[in-house]
Length: 166
Image: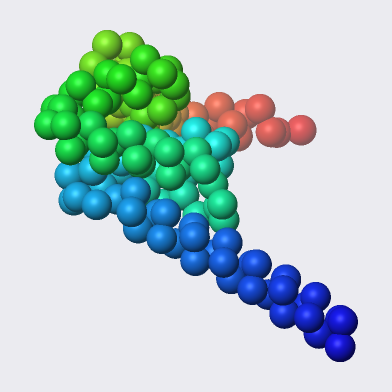
């Protein structure tokens, strides 16, 4: 009987925590604008998930961050102001993706630059291979000319006959 009561108390406590978390998460995102702004940040609980998609049970970091966003939106703060306050509080690691300005612009541009450099390198190597194969075909053709005059052929045959006589 005592085991049953303890077990049911544990189940009730667990259900209460889950319900409180769900209600807290639902309260934390009231407006679509807050959800949009929250999607641009990472949860700072070291889960490396987008703030609006943090699925840790009982994660107080995401709920407090979402509440701050909701409060700022309710006060009429702009998205830029909210972003600046989060960057001041957490640093640039709060961004879900790096901003497309300054040194971060290099991070956005490098894959394209590497692709172009790689394509140019491949075209250059293929052109070199083709040039080498054409040159070797020409030198092979020069070693075995297809047109030999009859006079040169007769002279070579007579010399070969003299050299092979014993």
